[in-house]
Amino acid sequence: MKLLPQLFHSSLGKKYIMAITGLGMLAFAAVHLAGNLRLFLGPEVLNSYAHGLHRAEESLWMIRVCLLVLIGLHVSMAVVLTHENRAARPILYERSRLPGASHASRTMIWSGLMVAVFVAYHLLHHSAKAQVSLTGHDFAAFRTTLADGTACHDVFRMVVAGFSQPVVSGFYIVGVGLLSHHLSHGIEAAFQSLGLRNRAWDAAVRRLASGAAWLLFVGYASIPVAVLCGYGREALQ
Image 1 (cartoon, rainbow, N blue to C red):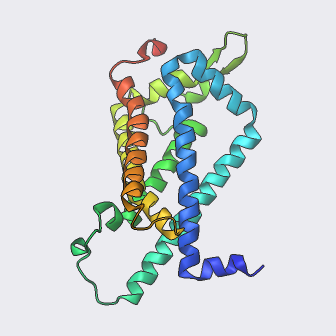
Image 2: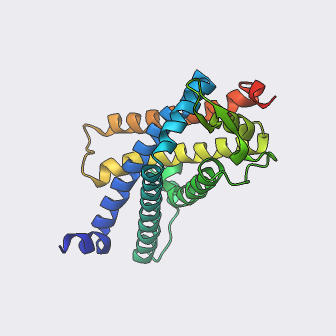
Image 3: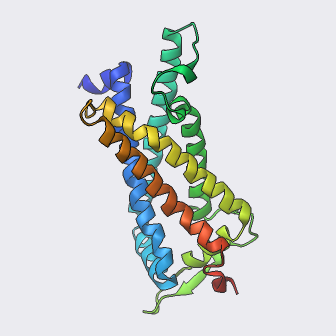
């Protein structure tokens, strides 16, 4: 029973929490991307997939709440650890000269906070259908009928309408870029915190982190880039 309080009060416990929540968010990002890429299979496939998710609305909101809890824990532990590290070293030194310290590792706290803002915007934009897209469209009014006669939200049209606005696409690409930048160090740090990284596996862990970050960036960025290049525009006519 004392294990949970100890996790929150020890530096090692906070690092465990950061590692586990970070890997949980990475898994979510990968699964979410697999769903988003259905856009390239056409309106019927994407809208059927989205309708299937929204039929389980309670489960969907539970997943969203869990994601927000993961983000909250991850960010709060990062802020606390950063404060503790600075308090332990009152004399500041030039971090840029630390051997092996990447730019991603030195800016983790800031990129993490910006990613949190990006996720909040993304949830408002696509999940809550709030009017934050700068497109002038009422996303809640986007409706369509599937091949089996089921009426549902036209998610395909909503995505195309949103990313047809260059400012929205630019913000999204910057957001996933920050996410990937954050992950490039975060995955390494998670393996380190969980004791799964050593000299023998160091190079492999670095390649895994870099490869996963690039795959997520290319996958997510491909969607707004494709729309800006004209993909799916006929849905708005």
